Image (cartoon, rainbow, N blue to C red; front, side, top):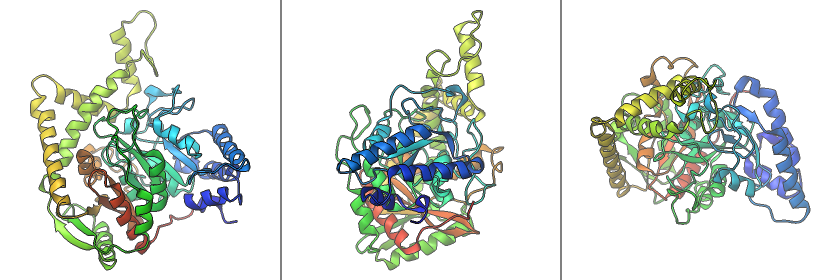
Length: 491
């Protein structure tokens, strides 16, 4: 049998269901792979060896008893450390939650367990999901398996790197401004941001509550769709969860894989194909557009002028919400506590704890958000940004009256060297230039590999209307059928 770690999730599940291998064998193969390479990649913050093997044994016992297994039973999955996992450390990449073991599972984690997937552990991330390179993790950066001197994207770089390094066939990320799609693009993997409210935020440590969206990561589109189907759907514990059935994303991915896009109308966002993107990125994108056209898609150019204001609007809305959400980390209720020697006031303990527990990027965004929400500035900054958000939504709505989906490069550039942008926050923020509008709108988006630029992966982004996640999977799977998948150099 070929290397289990190189197989797709679909292939692994079929082997387990057919009794050709066991979930325990599959899990051990991936745990061995993590032990072999993760000292160089640093995709994981915590590997739950005992828990993973116990979950795998439970799947094997169910199969032996004749139970019908789900489509992903026995398949290992890596989970971004932003989701609460009962009894397993959940740090959100921050010192302020170091050692915290939640007493409950996030809804998505529970759905993964119910589906028979095997959680390998928790993946590295920018602290509180604030970053675009996974360099802002309090536990050190993750390295891109394509080139260990380069970033794997962020904030979910750990999940994407685990896929590219063959440490896991599936992973879970969260996307606030592009933190699933952008790492997918620069690691040559698939990352999907579902419709906001299409996946539960219960148990997701909040960064920006009106933007945060957990979603699937995989090495191919069908695997991502299968994972999306497991974790998606209404959750009564999440007040923002959409109370209606999710579209059949798996059927859409299978349809797209036939390579037929006849009758599909795609719009190229003109604001995203001008100056600013690297030449190699635009070359790969244009070649992909040609491939989509050859499969029958009609491609037109669509102007969305307010997209130019998405980046500044996002960097007022997201920090404002993070300022409010992170107020709960006060050194009293859970996590780190500094200076509680019996002689200091509550305010002093809180100040010392937050000073020691939060990193520089988190502090930067808290200060920006607090200022934007302060008396006399709320209407000028946060209020204005929300008005821009409304205009961006109108542009999306108008665009989707003309086309079925929008396409663009996922990122303006390929993976940059570690340390190249940490001294210039604005240059770092530009990594999410093309992904942020979708978060402000609330619709789904997916990044699928579309080529290489100087040996590094390039991603194409497909954006669809809210609750039309199936459209993006169809287009992404069609492109994948034309250009194939991309394999990083051996580690």
